[in-house]
Image 1 (cartoon, protein in one colour):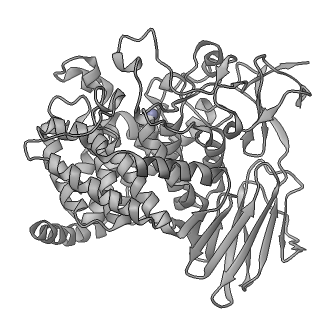
Image 2 (cartoon, rainbow, N blue to C red):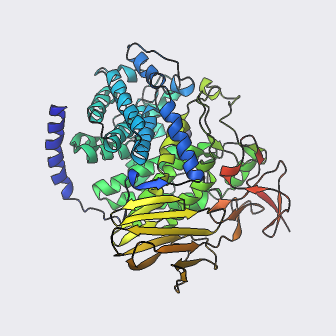
Image 3 (cartoon, rainbow, N blue to C red):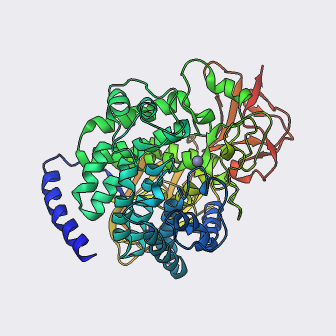
Length: 583
Ligand SMILES: [Zn+2]
């Protein structure tokens, strides 16, 4: 460790000098650390607790077994099964570790922290210099990329001193076996490969975590690696010029790659990356999104203007890869919200959270996982089903899929998605029962939103202080929206689509009330299919709990059909996302 740390420090000093030359982007806002926000009782906390408990209980021998086997070590315990042993061995280990490290930081759970440390030690034993774990691995880069974030989180959020040496061991082991720069699908095809399943490594997503590795270690090696994994020619360059290169691309991994673009912008200071990401997000909002905020039917971006989203309602059950897609979406929205302070990114984050991942069914002991949100007229809320017609055996046994890796990470991120800090105060992005602890004191939020309209925030401060509390007023907020302080209604009318600043000298006991008018509205699935619409109230799509396609006259739903948010749809229940409009 000593040699490693000293070398990293010296290289860090050199790279800090080099980086100082580039203009540093100045984000408008910054995120709070994981430990600053505690969720209080409500649906978000229930899902958070469920995932924390599940991964705290999951057998360490089981998680490490495939690593030990591939490294030729004794490997006690049960097999994990499903994708974890076969399709993409151990690929989600780093994400389980990342989720656990974030849970440990938020809850200060000693058993969780201790488990993270044991897992890091167990992993490090399997990372021999020959990289046996990565030999003949379909997705060596994918597995490595997830280890990078897991080990960085273990280091930062649980203070594990062995995590960085383990990161170096994993890097030495993985590099000889993975592509050394970002590749397009065509470029992957041109390289030698055993069969086509060996051409799907997601090289264009690796830059983000490698830039973070540079930030945390100061080691120039990670900076140089990160730059090579930015997919400029086929992705960021054309997107920055406003060209729509999204259609046909794998949806989740390319939204995940936008996180690399954000890191590229922040670390290199090149505005091209920011233009590319904001253009891509605009295109996703305009052409690719369902009313839920989800995107990518059959995991693929559609050709705009051809009614393909509308057609997908009839010809697939795989409308949105939910935990993975939501993880990437929330992350990119947090980057953009922090950078710009633009409330639209908060609106989009909230919409995806409530209508997709919050309704994900819990992972089961055997690895069965929620994967696709289904907007077909014969939808049921279920675990990922076997794809009978597929020639791949992992489509017949999809236990422990990618979405089992992103689910613990995204629910751990709910708290840091709720609040941000700016130079003049605190920004409230999500209305969710929660407690924020920051330099000024404590802000406690209570609410049954979005089922109800009222959100109450109470302050407890060490001493009276002047600052601003900024409330996100969603773009859809109706005219009845109002803000009160200590029972007195503010005279300034809240402007939808902005943060409303409440600036004053705050003291303990001050109460802010936000009353959000959530009007009913409809949204067509796409311009070519105007007679299929979703019904929304506030951030939530109202799903009809019914076997039959419901009918909408004006925006009045059929009376007698139960309406629920996605999180409240029971497992196995039939539901309808889109209604048929009749005159
Ligand atoms: Zn997934």
